[in-house]
Every structure is written in structure tokens, then in C-alpha cells.
Length: 156
Image (cartoon, rainbow, N blue to C red; front, side):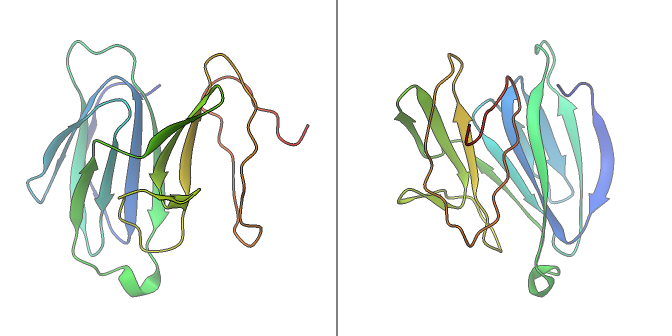
């Protein structure tokens, strides 16, 4: 879990992609954006040619739990104007005992609204009681699995 505050710092040529699981964080940046992110939401900061930001914990919150990915921008997009986007609602559906949330990219005929500059897929699989799922994946695309809690067994 994440604790405390991250003071002002700059980024260039990437996107910071924050998926909140527990607690709340306040994002502020040099564009004047001010946005609280809550569980089930994504904050996406596109640094492009440059941006500075802070991340502050919100008072009276329990332990924070979030995943933050840094997504490199393709060379042609590294000087894009900086921007900040908040996604409070994402495609979510049930498959057996597993809840799937499409965070970024496309999967199973669904498309997330999340801005991206290169092919990418982010899919949250939530199964607090356990479960089994078969996912159709593109064999030409590189996939990774990042368990945030519990344990995972892949292909037996």
C-alpha cells in the first residue's frame, strides 16, 4: 500500500496511469488540475513535453492501495502537449465469479475511454472468493500478469 505524500516533481515523455484500489489520493499538477481519485477510477497524466505534479493522501483515509504504471510515449508523441484525464467510469462486467474492469485498450469487443498512444491493454480481474477464467488473447501481443493481492495460477 501507498502511504503519505509525493511532493512536486516533473515528468516528460511518458504517461502516469494510476488505478486506485483502496483509499483516495489528491492529484495536482502544473496545468492547474486538481482531482481526487477513488477506488475503481483511473487518473492518467500525459507528461508529453513536460509537467510537474504532486500526489497527496486525503485525510482520514484507510491504508492506500493503488497500482501506478509509467507508460513510455512513442518517439513521435514525446513532445505532445501535457494533459490530465480522469476516468471515473470504466467498462465493467461479470464473467462467472470474476469481475473484469477494462482500464485501457480493447478486450472482448469492449473499448476503454482511456487515452493511449500505442497498443496497450489493461484489464483488472477481481475475484475475492477465487475463480477460474479463460481469456482470449492476441498471440502477437505481449501480455503480463501482475497480481496485486492473493495468488494466481496460470495454465495449471
